[in-house]
Image (tube, rainbow, N blue to C red; front, side, top):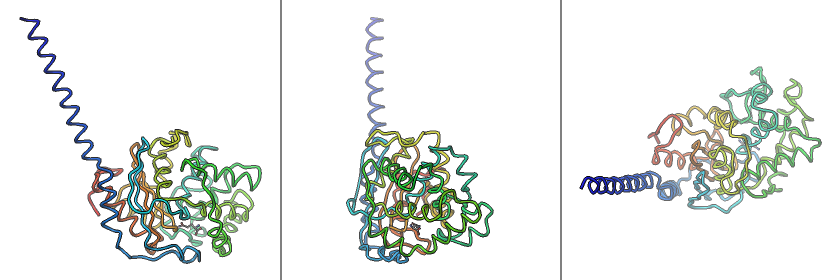
Length: 341
Ligand code: GLN
């Protein structure tokens, strides 16, 4: 009799354990309805026409403005998408933290702090004034000055080797062999007088670590790499997955460097709109004038968007709204769930 009771107790304990596990899984599933939130974000903002394509790089003005893609990639490599996920747009400034990560991988995070800087500028991404008023000159890796400095810091034997290291690194984050959009490169390099001025100014202040024109060329090629929205989500998911690309399984960055890299993105990823972005979305992210944005939920997943129309700070209008919507819906944010939109 005694035995029987113990037996039936353990049976019912086992059954309730399974019930709890099952319910938990169901709740977790409901809380993480990635496809629903991606679809919602797409539907909600697809008709929004605020902002304008970047046109200071002439060819960017010819990218069809209505294109819109929203993708989530999880740390276990699952993809959820809505809208345009195949169109290749230029990565532009979204490339910047990834090249900063290459410098970290080669020389450690201290070099970023000492030879570039990690403070926000409070000024536009292409500011020459920032180079003059801040002692660090390059200020941080997310603005043009700091990104050109990062390219110059990549340890390489030649310009060809510098380019190979930069492009191989970004391809490893995306998990496929990415190519330069040559038309974008030509359009940007032919008109790169402002960035050339920045490279030369940095060199003048001994804050550029290679030949300035070489750094400018490699930086411009880096910005002209073609990616689609799905590539960008996988790049972010690699950061969410402690530096291991969840699709290829390849380790791209040592997990110990992820906190510093994400901190740079949080503090500076939206330039002079970084405070507003952390206030409203609470996610380390990076934008680019090609219309891309990637946002990272550390240890969890990434959201990528593509939409060419930008606000005056150079950040994609629909992309920002889509990411804010998804973050609020899923209750994710660096400092806790953020319900603001
Ligand atoms: N390649 C662009 C530039 O140097 C990158 C700017 C951006 O995306 N914010 O101006």
